[in-house]
Each structure stands twice: as structure tokens, then as C-alpha cells.
Image 1 (cartoon, rainbow, N blue to C red):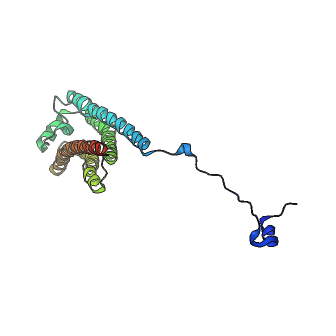
Image 2: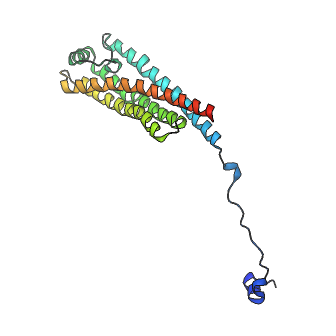
Image 3: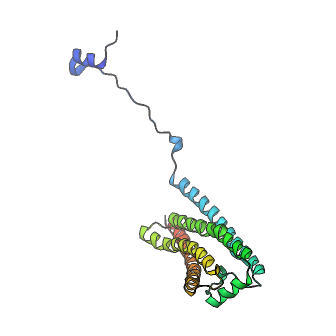
Length: 208
């Protein structure tokens, strides 16, 4: 009967020949991902996000909100006014729109108007994160799309509240107008931040 390693050591001491057992490797080399493959996957997600953002921007601002002017006597929706709007304008717009028309605008805010800033913000965060190596610079460039998403979602709520009364509150209108202007400014800054990130990424790949 074959002796166990402990029995061999007891009988022969330090000269005992103990067979070596090697555990099989649990790592599957086929599951390893190279940095290049991970970067390519990130780029595919960014491209898909950019396409979705462009579509939602077109759908919200160039199609749906433009069509809403047919229900307001030709008056533009507050979201489209880059320079903001006054209390008198909101009062006139409220009178020109029916309850159903204002309900449609609120529905746009809750659907495509919510998806656009969320998808755009996520895409731009990923775009900047995959192209900018410096953590400090990355956070600086991230500020614009993060703030844009928050401000834009807040704008949707503020515009609905300002339009909800026949006698709009001046404070609500001022808040909605300020948020609208800030949203457009942050949107432009986000585009510039994305362009800067792409430029830095290309320069880093050329110097590598």
C-alpha cells in the first residue's frame, strides 16, 4: 500500500521524496481583455450615444417643439428661446395654448425631454473619460455635461410650472428663463469640452 507524504517523512526524515501537486490554473486566458479591446468597446458606446443624442436633439428641438408652434398661434416654446423670456411672454403663451396643448408640452418634457439630457450627459462623460488621461482635467471637462443634465431636467419642471397658471408668477418665470439660458450655455460648453477631449485623445495617440 502506498504511503502518504506524512508517513514517508516520518520514516525517511528530510530525505523523503514527497510528490509535488500542482493545482490547475483557474484563469481562462480567453477571457482576458487587452486595453485596446476595452478602448474599442468604449468608442463603440460613445458613437452609439452620440448618434442617439443627435437624434433626440433633432426630435425635441427641431421637430416636436417646432410643431408645438401650431398649437400656440406661432409662438415659440420657452425651451427654444436661447435668450430667455419674460412674464408677459409666458402670459401670452398660456392664453394662446389650450390645456391639451400644455399637456402635450409637459409630456414632451417627461419623455424625450428627459432622455436627451440624460443620454447626452452620459455619452459626454464617457467621451471625455476615454480621451483625457489627467484626472484633474477630466473633472474640469466633466463639469459642463454634468451641470447641463441637472439644469435641463430642472428646466423642464420650471417651464411647466410657469405655464401652469393663467397669471404666471414672476419668480417662477424668472427661474425658468434663467435655467433655460443656463442650459443652452452649458450645452455649448459641453460641446466644446467634448471637442477638446477628442483633440487631446488624438494628440496622446500620436505621441504614444
